[in-house]
Image (cartoon, rainbow, N blue to C red; front, side):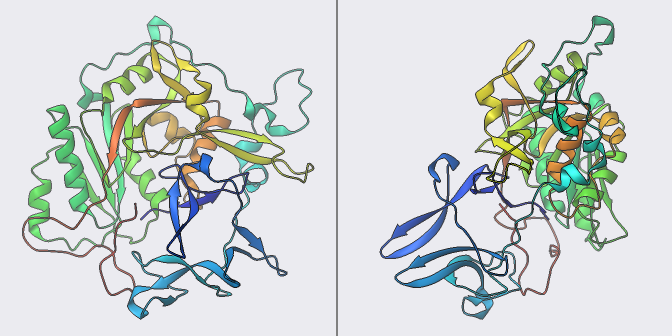
Length: 401
């Protein structure tokens, strides 16, 4: 169900944004494998451009030209242009269609994103492009005492908002983890693409969590952006906690700390971190390539904690521009900027943070508040089994990391 996976950094490293790790090569017994490593360990670009302007991830091994290409487990690991979830991707023979990669330029955020073009140019500035104000990062300020509204009961202030696709077992697992870690339930709005053909046993389990609102859409394949918007529109509390469906609470999920930040400062989004890694960065417009005539949007991975612009009264929390999908947000402010853009099939997560920044809204990151990204090993429910959303592949989908 995830629409975002790998992206290319300004220095041509391939990064998996959900974990903040980069792709690298590893040699073993005369074979070459791809592995996820710390991005600081990657020193070369893997991209080759052919005479037609098409890009491939390529390497010459023993006089053989090999490319990163999807392979089909259902067809003896032959190269395929229609891989199923769970099929391997390997360094194998190049295929004109299967190995091709589309490198999406992020310039369109300057050219086409209306809110970004409206970013404010500082008064009396010598700035020569409209979005230069985007590079400024004002410090977080405490709210005046008369604007502070303390949340004393989390269930009255926070609703979990989750988009899922035929995975109610994961929503139930999330609800159970909330109850176990906090000692009480929180409101949850889960929006499911459908169809609504779940057995009665599923709804009996959902009923065990009175604050869980499980909505199944009449229109399949809503997309993650539209599904998140519909979930947030159902939220009645002043804050919502956005999560992917394969997240679990744990003893480090100190939600009250994020609530305290929103209660007392001018922050709009306060983010948790994943127990293992995660993607956080600063945005900046500037010249990042050889062509100095072109400005691009840069994302500096890890800059939030390196710069260490701390939040008042919360020294372990810092200013940030983009974080992982585990953040507490002001419901009204997110709706005011239009939520997630349903027209974007990819980078909708990055886009909403860009628009938050363009609108002058502040983001904080608390690395010591953690959620667990827990890939399910199998579907586990009481009673009759059901299938996750399927494709032309034979087996049930394997959830992405």
